[in-house]
Amino acid sequence: MYTTELQKNPRILPVSTEAAEQTVAFEARVAGDEYIEPKDWMPEAYRKTLVRQISQHAHSEIVGMLPESNWLTRAPSLRRKAILFAKVQDEGGHGLYLYAAAETLGTSRAEMIDALHDGRAKYSTIFNYPTMNWADIGAIGWLVDGAAIMNQVPLQRTSYGPYARAMVRICKEESFHQRQGFDIMLHMAKGTAEQKAMAQDALNRWWWPSLMMFGPPDDNSPNSAQSMRWRIKRETNDEIRQKFIDATVPQAALLGLTLPDPDLKWNDAKGGHDFGAIDWEEFNAVVRGEGPCALERISARRTAWDDGAWVRDAADSYAAKQSSKKAA
Amino acid sequence: MERALYDYLLRRGDDSLILSQRLSEWCGHAPTIEVDLSLANLGLDLLGQATLFLDYAASMNADVHNADALAFHRDAAEFRNCLLVEQPNGDFAQTIVRQFLYSTWQKMLFDRLAFSKDPTVAAIAAKAVKEISYHADLSADWMIRLGGGTDESNRRLKAGVEWMWRLVPELLVADEIDNELITKDIAPDPASFETDFMTKIAEVFAEAGLDVSPLPRNFASGRRGYHSEHLGHLLCTMQYLPRAYPDAQW
Image 1 (cartoon, rainbow over the protein chains, first blue to last red):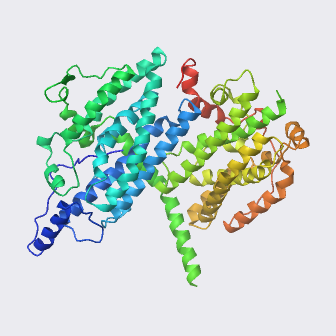
Image 2 (cartoon, rainbow over the protein chains, first blue to last red; image 1 turned 30 degrees about the vertical axis):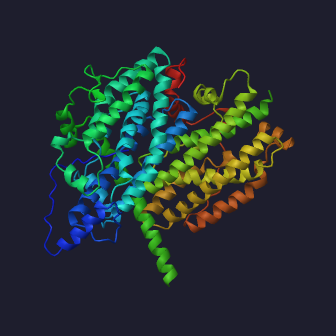
Image 3 (spheres, chains in turn cyan, brown; image 1 turned 60 degrees about the horizontal axis):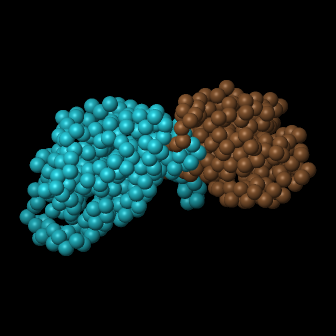
């Protein structure tokens, strides 16, 4: 799935004079679209920005398993169950290789997970909303994963090599996730009256949070300029949001569902849709941890981690005993 | 319809389906991401096996439309899985003990089932046995790791064995349905691999620092639809949507 830059005004470290020459060389490489690799010199602020962004992305994948696994045990057919099981497993896999990509920058997975559990690290706001009916699983795939693809396709060309390469695989899988979501919506929207009502209800609840996934508007996105310059980011929040809306409107029409925005209409002059005001108050509140399921999500993660501590200890202890046996 | 074969297919399909459902409860909540992924692998394999067996069963029964009808529209008394697979996950040790006992048995059964005179059964078993081999290895590795890890993991593993051990004898009995299929060379006799099974258990238990208790008297007959109290709750969750909206296609 997806995370956007959520920490406002991170401290950007000033570049020291000694590093100035290296910085110039670094910026030239980035500007020339070269990949930066783990052993290459990089500005400390670049490293920090990446650790923050990649770990937020990883956390979002792991927390994002929860709203979907909420319906895994209740998936309505064997086929749907198998697809959802594989999809949620994919999200776990994405988390794993994103943590691995972030680790190449010198921060351990344990440190990142600690930061998630004690609230220092963020994850995508979208996962703080509840999945209330089966169509929510369709809406997440269609809209949330659809938004993720829009965001992540440019990340395949992000300047940090391990992150870019992780994104290549992730994008392939997200594209399957998006299609399975749309397929669920299609069955629901063309199904019984009750199913159609569930589909519309899910769309009503997920539409606006999906638009918020692209992050704050460009005129209020403090980190965007630096991230664009470092080619960590390749398109602005508003550009991708517009692209997403333009792609989604005809899909909703095909489903026969109504997007919950009375101001949504085609604008010939701009060659895109105009849309209603996004409630950034709501977004900021969810970023602050006031989302409807924020407590449930983080408590589920902490519980899984704490309940699993004895298993991890046992595995470590067994491995240590084995290696000392070998050494003896 | 060949009643014995039909029932046998339900037994195989239901074992896999119910165990897969249990494993899916772990999804997103396992001790590490790696464990989460591996439990999902097992669950997905089992779900695939369940679908193949139940589809085959449905094809033999004019009253049943497809595998989904069998999975979602039968009540507990019509399920034919053994009691072992329906046991609650408990902690990770209890889940691993359940998996180890079942996969070890299932591996030996399917090794033989791959030579069934029924070509569909043989084909499903031949495909599944490769998956089950991995399930048996993975769970045996965890048995040994937990047994030899810390005092706590060893204690939890023993508690898991204590919970599951009473349900092993059910795996080893053959009833008239098995006997009919054994005679026709469609199914193997569980007695034919009981010694191998107990040897394998003893081997892994020894490495995990566990004693092998004598097998108790069998009290379970899940194969006839007599289940533990746990299955009804599992089905309430699993079958909720198709039961609540019987006219819907998903």
